[in-house]
Image (cartoon, rainbow, N blue to C red):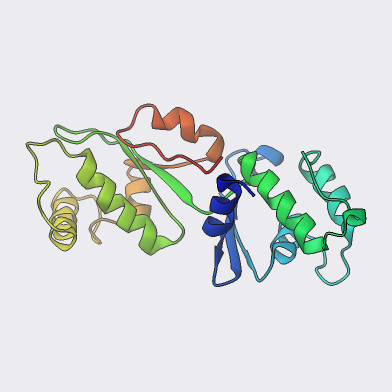
Length: 208
């Protein structure tokens, strides 16, 4: 397989367990619907959860028919006559979803509140800890050379917490949900990621 496929597998699996976010807005009546976390022990299990199919009784025909009905016609999948397992077929379908920007290992956010010495930036993560660590790293990158860029991660977080509290932007300091509520930060859907990144100091490249 190519490097993109290998990166896809690496991003979506951890100790043989699968985890990703389903950006279902393109395929629902509510385009602003937030991404849904889907987890499982195999490619077959997570795809069945995404398609809302029973894991134990699903076969090749059911999976491919439901996939095409709910999403789109697969680009290129293995047929059972080629000796591939159903899990291999599901793995190929998941890669197709990834390439079509329907699923991703991360949630993406845009810090859009511009001040003197701070440019807009993107940050992302698989979970709250990763998201806030990404926020701190990219916040530092977005600072102008004249600002405090030399503080270590804990010092920077303390200063940010104090700044947010003193400005009345929340009693908890730097908090993702409060930053969203004050309109400093907005979630970014996959189909808008490239467009939004044009106006930020950092850009995330997906593996395709």
